[in-house]
Length: 113
Length: 201
Image (cartoon, rainbow over the protein chains, first blue to last red):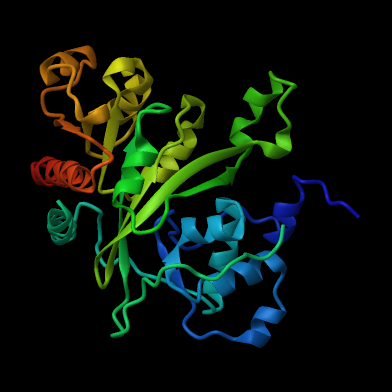
């Protein structure tokens, strides 16, 4: 049985399109402890994201490597984070314009220049 | 849709227990100005080109063109990654070229520390939309960079600035974006511009 292409993402997310966490495309996500039994009970998309997040990576990388759209990726990761199955890395800096962060990035780039 | 293929590539987790964080710089400009080349030059992974956004936002446009299969209505983006320190990863995100994807530009730019608008002096108009976006529709500090194709600068930067109607406070740089060192210096220009423009606020 083919599901209408437009329905399927909303089935996966239970109709939700918003997430509780601040998940930017470059926000890092990881799995604090991998639970194979838990993974086995997930839908394929959620399972793929959960397994790929065993290595710390960004929301965009997870979306790309799993072939799951960014919106659906965000909702699924938000759910997994709500049950502490994935960790959404807190922003160490309050703002992308934080002085210390800017200096660290600048100094890192200068080493490449 | 199936589960992911392949094994995770590139280890970004430090082993000493610190929680890594990330920063982002957006690379904008018209189609074919060298955004992907720039990202490749400095990324430690091959740039990831993905059709990540499947969005209703583009539907009104597609309705006008019955030739487009809506199931393939996706927006491509590409991005790369460079570890700056054990606990800090810099992401470079290229914007989708077409203006109709501006809602995705907003999404991409959220949380960015700065943006680099790349221009090709043979086709300045290809980057007008990107310059306008950062001048008028975004708070993200930005610099403009002339891509020196084949390492040659064919126009004075003052002329380029005038042709783009750039405000005097916007830095105008030049780089051969195939060169990692040149790309790093251009990105330093972006970061320093953010430092000076946000310090004034």
